[in-house]
Image (cartoon, rainbow, N blue to C red):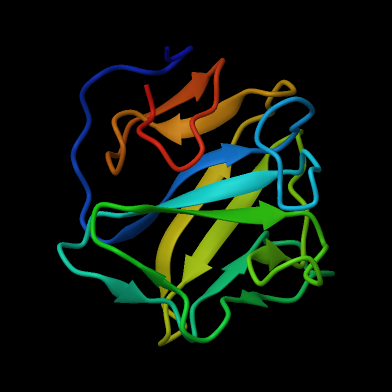
Length: 154
């Protein structure tokens, strides 16, 4: 159920995109340690599987370094990949070295040639809401009252 700014239209994009963002997670998805942390989801709409070796994420904070995807991380065509944004890289390989701010910020995805593959500026978000593409992989965004980690945004 989309919020303000959402609709069911939008141009479908091709490639790997940032698809959904939760910047304040209290009661939603839990990581492998049972903690509700900030997260973002990627969606592969490229027509092929993508090896993320050499790809990076950055929250555009000059105090933070680029976070590099672990070598051998892949995402199948039409699939989702969730990255925890919690500054806890020791838990597992898909924990970024930065947190998201609920006041809104810009997240950038760089490919293995250091070119910008996608960049999203998200607005201030209430706790346990998400900002996501509606529908998945489109250029239309909505605020969702119920986040949908690794599933279609509805």
